[in-house]
Image 1 (cartoon, rainbow over the protein chains, first blue to last red):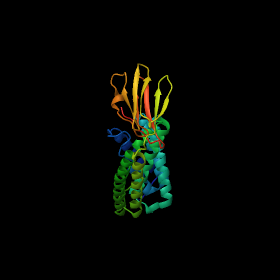
Image 2 (image 1 turned 180 degrees about the vertical axis):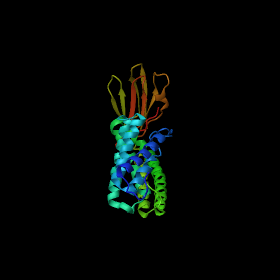
Image 3 (image 1 turned 120 degrees about the horizontal axis):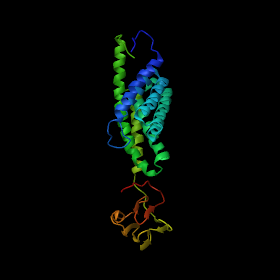
Image 4 (image 1 turned 90 degrees about the vertical axis):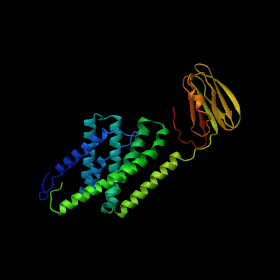
Length: 178
Length: 119
């Protein structure tokens, strides 16, 4: 990475954070899940950190690249998994953009993280209902999945908040930060 | 956490709670039995009148009983008899099926509640 004194090249910033998010995305894909569709979504941490530090458009680049490159690496590009992943990420970014415009710095990492998690999950179930499992029975899963999204949204929000805290303290001490 | 965060987390909790009430709330009482037979006509019967019904399916005769606003398979020519073990169906959206015989019984009501699938 580069030192704090030299201005951050936005492209390099996006690439660095996207690489981090992709690594988390793929690591997470290897973990078994107790309920189909439930995973911690820790890549969300990266999106929220970038959003709070650098704004929405940088976060959108990072999340978009993660979904695209993550699907290419996992071999799910243009599969149903990819459609779900992309639509969830798009909805999360749309909600984050709206919240960013309305609340800005009145909202912290936890708030943004929970909003993103619920938008992501809700949209995925809606897309699954519309495209892949066209039966209302799938909506019975929605409360379970939303509860999981709420919990994991708070968890990754707390992680993002502590990452942001560490980065801010490093910057205060004049150490290098991305 | 900022006050905005607390508000968002509380609001999100309310949305999650609402989803439980909407999708797992009390089911509507059933009013009619909808019976579908593969290759045959489908029947739509009121649950109000008690009756036994013999339905000719793909491999034999399924016996369906309507009692006290409920409906069930009493007998079917299949091997495992999952349809019979499904027991009484009373809420709108409840379904039992005898797949070997091609007979499906579904309870319908004024408000269609979402059914769960069990195998």
